[in-house]
Length: 586
Image (cartoon, rainbow, N blue to C red):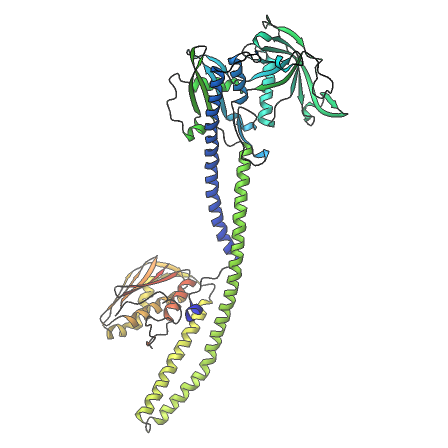
């Protein structure tokens, strides 16, 4: 019961201080979470890039070597592989959250920051020439009748006929993919078509824009069911200087367009799209990363982000060995990923902060109850001590009077009893004084700190124990020096109680050594036997478990500890090999 009531009390605190400390831990934990999440996102996405790169290689190698175009719908294996390169060479991954959390589409539909990511594929012959690649091209489907088997895929390749208006259209389509996360809508109204080679050169284009885009507010309107659904602009392509031999002019003005609800007419052109990436990315990847002997570095996770990951696969086309080259450089931190990262980190922080708030609230509630009990206990102890002092003084006075009255006529036994009463009254009075001193020390809130010379203070406090040193033949030394900022009165109380305790319990012929510096003051003394120091800083706890020692109240070390704590210091005690050590750490 004693230990529970009088164990060393921790320094009082408030909810604000508790929560501030908890939030410091929350911030550290959140930073660790953010670092792990950062690495995890990059690692996961790069692993996905490796996987998709491998899958792409398998798909393209099959197309180049084995796919058949029985009905000449696309124009042979090279055209098939070229179309697949444009459509499928990209890095795509979603985290399973909302659409807004979609992360890098490298070379495909992406946010504008994904321009820095690269996903390239190319078929390179034995001489290092690029046969086909995923450089951006316009693809469409030509319908000559209502039989789907007769449909033909047609391609416009800027490398075959470089027309500024069409290159501008391709650049605009890529911009829309990066910035608006969508495919550009456009119709080919008329074109020059070479069906045998599956080539098309658009002549007239109609490009559609969002009706909400104020930049194009003065354009024509597409109206469907009396509602404006889009804006459009028609552009005629200048084909002057282009060799059009083998091409046939076709007019698709009559076929169904965006917003039309009429029957389809033939010939018609549909499914117009731009697939692929900037040709500059392809050229740079091939020139810088392609090596006929294969890669000269390991495919590592960091490389996928910093240097990119190049892959080389030998394939056969028309009995000629070629290289299927793919190159991925993952740009992780686009806008959507940053947003997701910030949201996840923020959610983690808020959850941790809420948990910290609940824990601090619960602990503060418990502390308030404990503080109220401590205040009640201290008040009870102080009142009890004050109330006992008066009858104790009366008892002492009566005993002293009886001794004076009976010292001539009283028996030896009678005088011995009276003397014992006086000793116990003095012992109890001293205990009450020490109890009140401990209570007063614990209630000090704002110590008056000044610079204190530690060695000089120790030497001054030991002067009154000179006689005790001589009587017990104690060897006493003070070493060290230095100053510390402290309340001198409280520090004096702490040091004097340590010295007094050392004097009481040092064995005959033993030694006491005080060592002081700017970091600590230690008092080391020899004892007759080892002392259990586990609860020795608690009030009323003595090293003598039998409590037969009437020279001590078990309050000296408790007062020293309280005085040290009020200065912001800490008292630690230990006893080994019959040497008791008390240290005040500054």
